[in-house]
Length: 153
Image (cartoon, rainbow, N blue to C red; front, side, top):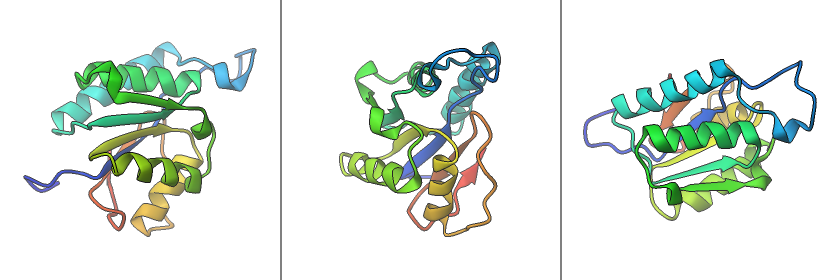
């Protein structure tokens, strides 16, 4: 990212979550110990890259909420910067894009924490590259505009 160029948005897939041993509702699946460490590492990497979103929007599912709250802490953002949306739970790219667009209208950069396959689909749409690899757990990509290919981490 060029100096002085603020990203429009950062897409993040939630970190590793309990599976397949987890018994209970999918919505309530928590991060594993590995996932907690990944989320902290993602937050530290974002901060090291100079990324400081104004807002974080995330699926209200437990694993995305946990990832997002860790990012809020690591990025030293106020708790009020986080918005949890039930509509983003396992949402497809168009739903994620709509929520992201609404958040971007309130100021950029915005960080979105969501699930696969929707987050990967959204990255493909935003980049115009249908061949982008799917997001791995806790992976993040920066987009400076809707036509950007994104910077993967």
